Figure 1 (spheres, rainbow, N blue to C red):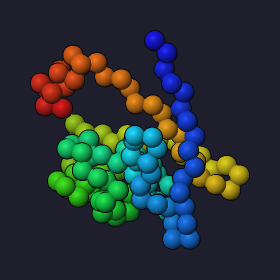
Figure 2 (cartoon, rainbow, N blue to C red):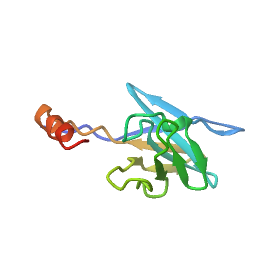
Figure 3 (tube, helix red, strand yellow):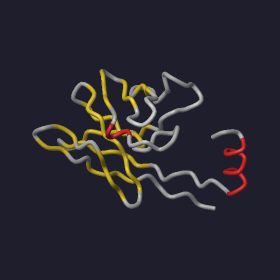
Length: 121
């Protein structure tokens, strides 16, 4: 089994700052401006899938607009429930532009999904 290589994607940017959402293929990412530098995460909250790109950001913390789970943008850790973690993606600055390195999602087999659901994940 081979795994797909990471892909570099240019981050949308304007005079107003970074766009809050990035769509690449069939995946959606949230883009946050933290002190002038982008932080890119999955857009879906790991709790119940709320759009983090629509969440409230204070400092380096984003709060999910659906259930209020708070995630540290520097680490991806959840401040309200340590059983959740937000996936972050590497960001690079090259040739005067910001790029995100999108890593393909891990394939989860059907029996792994059943175990996750049974465990409440």
